[in-house]
Every structure is written in structure tokens, then in C-alpha cells.
Amino acid sequence: MKGDIGKLLGDLERYKLAITLEGDQGAGKTQFAFQLADGFADLGMKIGFYSLEIGANSNIVMTNRDKYLKPANRERLFVSEENSLKDVREKAKVFDVIIIDSWTKLDVDSSEFDKLRKDFPDTIFIVIFQRTSGGKIRGGTKPLYDAGINIIVHKVDNNFINNYAECTKNRYGQTGLLYNVSQKRLVE
Image (cartoon, rainbow, N blue to C red; front, side, top):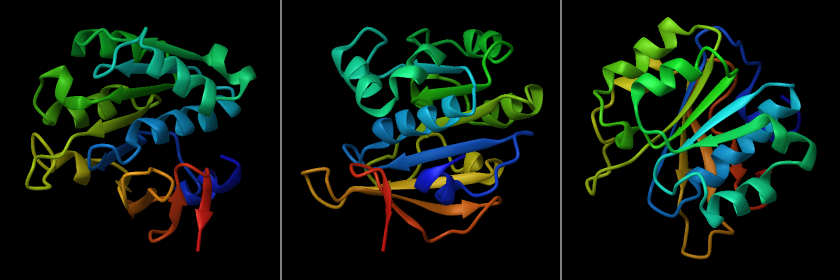
């Protein structure tokens, strides 16, 4: 993947690739997920985006699509609000990348995350996990062990401009790089 987002992710291998996103409410997880979709669309991939929290036809989803995806890449993004694991499994046969916002809305055990990776090794899964009020991932931390990349989107303040994404685990590159979600670039 090109650009700063590519530097953040590293030299990706498609085989069984899964990326987890977590962070506080309002940190920019969804916006960052749209930026990832744009990066994969740049590579010619088709993306299925499950907007389970906001809804497929929401103005917020359309605004994020228009803001974070290049016009040429928008035709590669398909947004759904179908919240069944069965549908995700069907679409994993069709799409190169599946983004789920968020896993909690599927209402399935977190062990299903690794099953998806293994059952569809050529489909890239990017999954947003919600945190509890205690800062833990809802449903348990098992997906963090199974994923190749774990990214925390940090909420610095309430104006969004300073929020950043950081890989806390990265089998394909380095950890510790900070990516400003609003500015779409690495920061020092």
C-alpha cells in the first residue's frame, strides 16, 4: 500500500490477513477504516463495508466515503448493514476486503473472528472492536492474538484533529509509528 498509511501497515501479506481497530468512542475508528478501504481500493481490491452501527444509507457513511475515498475508488466500496455472520461469510467469497464496524453488532462470540480468517484465507478482514467502560475489548481479547495487526485509535481531545492511530502489534512492519487520522499522515 502506498503513502503514509502504507508505511504504518508495512509490507502486507494477504494470506489470512486480519486487522483489528480499537479505541475510545469518538477517536476516529470509522474514519480510519474508510482510509484503509481507500488504500486497498488503490490496489484494485473490492471492499465490503459492514456499517452496523451507523447504517448503510446514513449521511455520515456517505460523507465519510466521499471524504476519505478517492472518486475512482468509490465504485469499489459496497456498504451494507446486514448484521449476520452468515452474510459476512457469503460476502467473504466475493470481496477482497471485509470491514466490520463493529464486531459487537454481529452478536457472535469473538472466536468466530479467527474462524473467518482461516475459512477465507484470501479475504482481508478489518474489524472494529468496541471497548468497555473499563477499557477492555468487548467480548474478550482473543482477536488481538489472532490478528496480524492491532491498531489503537487514540482520542487525544474532543476536536478530532489530534487523534492518531498506532500499531500496537504488527507482523508486517514496525510498531510505534503514529498516524494522524484527520491529516491522513504520519506524525513525528
